[in-house]
Image (cartoon, rainbow, N blue to C red; front, top):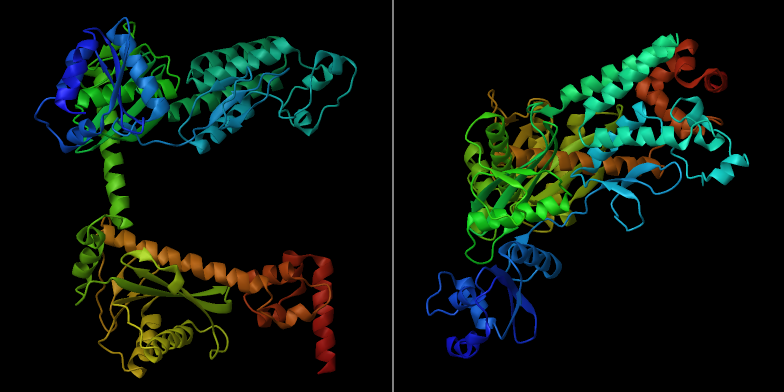
Length: 605
């Protein structure tokens, strides 16, 4: 839409608060905005100068303008947020957070169950959350079930079914984890009291739960039920311990929402702390993609409204680093300068900075940058630390694997441009080595790998990592010398425990900086060769690739053999073991079968 075309219809746009919507030629919604004066705001887009290319691109695409008048700026704010959330227009701020968060549901049914769910449905049940971590939810549910006996069965516990005696208590009742509502041993009122304590725990209000248990303990003590009183005392003790582990800022604070923002060009990061009764009960950080020239205030205002809505926050006070626009006049906006609230804001700032740095590190470590320099940044760093002649764009790593000293195999993984090249991974069944000999095994597989590359005239890696000690590295170097490849590729050893890197013949090792991205890349390569080797090893064993003389004994199965080898390391040691030692590992019956088989073989000899 040109400026002239806009001027022809500008008079139809009122000087009132509301929201405006821009559409393209295909009637696709491009942008939703709010304004206290619709005509002034929309007119600003059709000036002759533009502060950013994206604004210019937006205006060029506009073919239709729609607007909705509302009563106030607050209403415009709410309507704008709901439309952005529903339609996600291309040129609006994008909250890059598409996770499905877990809830704890109190199911709408007689004697409600509680459990984790990611689906929030309109079935009348009570949904508590959402929570940012499924692991945290499971921990909470496990914690709750330790102290509040609730049913876990799916029985239809209607009053009619209970009175007819359709159900019997299960093991959970006898273990003390349920009070048996299925047989009428617990009434609905007492059960509901337990659910209220669940709500208190999930809202961080442990004080009321502890008070409730203290009252119960006193009742049991007065009734001379000292065992039950002692059980209550232990529950109180554990709850107080759990409360001490929570991040408590101040017991004088009520429920608060704390937000901090870090803006970086077209990305912004917002950190959120949910505080309930002075305790931090939720933490969350999200990235947002800004599309036009939104200010920090606009981005934070958008994020605050969306996050509070997503997390069903009922807090009546919001702590932020600067003034923001917020539609609900009953909510207090606080910009703290000192005290506990300032400490909370500082903590949110620390979280948002850490989040951004972690994203940067992950991006660098996985080398997902768009330019060649970004992709190779870690590799240039590794080249510098190891004094390599070339950038190690092609790295290979070898590792030997065996099961408690038995069944040797080897694995090799390949990384190109810092990323796994899984089509180049190789595994090796050892052919020429008898018994367990890590040095000879490493020499064989390195020889086989690079002999193959020579034969097929394929490029050699710039860096080869041998996961093991100096003995394995020396054995690998012998193969390189035999193949005439000395000086054509660099081999280094990686000490298993200290994460030190050393070259053949050197007495001193190299330690990469503990927080460097190059060390993280080396660790990733090492972990990948371990994973690949162990997976191959297990697959080989499960397919029956490894055979030994114990497998020919009737009554001795694979699990028994594995248990024996894990303890005795070899068949020779198993043959020489005392009966008592064998019985301790596999039991009297199988130990007798084993000893009889050994005696029979000896008699045949």
